[in-house]
Image (cartoon, rainbow, N blue to C red):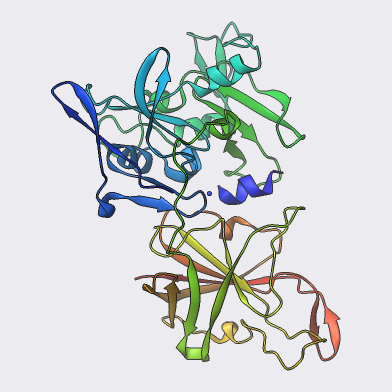
Length: 377
C-alpha cells in the first residue's frame, strides 16, 4: 500500500483571478481568504478554494502542487491550479457555478501512456450496477459508492445529484482491471474521464477506494516556489499533567514507517497545522528508555487526561491554539485512520509508537496505541 499517499489521504500566495472588461487580470490575494497547506507549501483562495471545499476537499483533490498560474490548455491560455489528484481551471467569463472546471486528467493520463481514451466496453447493464451507455461501461459496488460520494456543487441542495457526480468524476472509460501503479504494486482500478479509482483491500470497508494521484503523476511545474510556513507547531502545553515542551517535525522513513523521536513530542509533518481546519497529529513515547532512564517520556501522563482538559499548541509565529480533550480510545498499531485527514479541525495525540520501550527493566511490546482526540469546541 502506498502509505505516504494514504496518510496524506494530505506555498506561495496564490493569485485570485478577476474579470475586467472581458480580460483576465491577476490581483494579490487577501490573506484572510487563503487556506494554506504546509504539506506542500501552497494555498488556495477565492473561487478555487470554494470549489475545493464544496466538492470533496482533500480526499477528492489532494493538496495543491502549484499556485494559481497561467498555462496553455488545449490551445488556450487559462488560469489553472494543480492538485495531487486533479487540475482545476478558472473560467471567469462563465456564469457560476461553471467558473471553475476540472481537467480531464483520466483521459490525459492514459494519452500520455499512449492508451486510448476509452478502454473496452460492455453491451448492457449488470445487476446492482450503474450502466453508462455513452461509454459502454458499468460502475459497481464500492467504485459506484465512491463515484456517488462527491460531486461539483451545482444546485445548492444537500447531497450530490448524478449530474454533480458526473461533473466531478466524468464518465467511466474502463471496466475495473488490474494495473501496476507507480509504487510497483498491482491494484484493481477503474478509469474515469477525470479520475482513476483504486481498490485497496487492506483498508476498512467503506474506505477501500482511493482516488489516484493523477495530478502528481502528470508532474506539473510550479511557476513560483512554496513559501516557508510560520504555522508549524513548535510547543505543546498541557497544564493538567504539567507538560510543557517543544515539538519537533517528523515524517516517514525510507520504509514508510513513522519516525518517532526518543524523548520529544513529534508533529507528523504530513498532517495539518493548527488553524488549517483538519487533523493535527502529534505523537510521543509513554515509557522511558533503558539507556536514558533519567529523561521522562513526553506522553507518560497523557492517559490521565480528563475530558475538557486544555491542550495549548504554539506555532512558529507565536500564535496559540487551544484544544479541549474529547475522548481517548485504544487502537491497534495498524489502524491508521485516526492520523488521516478528518475534514475538520482537531488535535490527535498518539501515545507510544514503536516497541522498544522499557518497563521494569524489560523491553515490552506495546500492542495498542492510546489515541487522544481534542477539538477547539
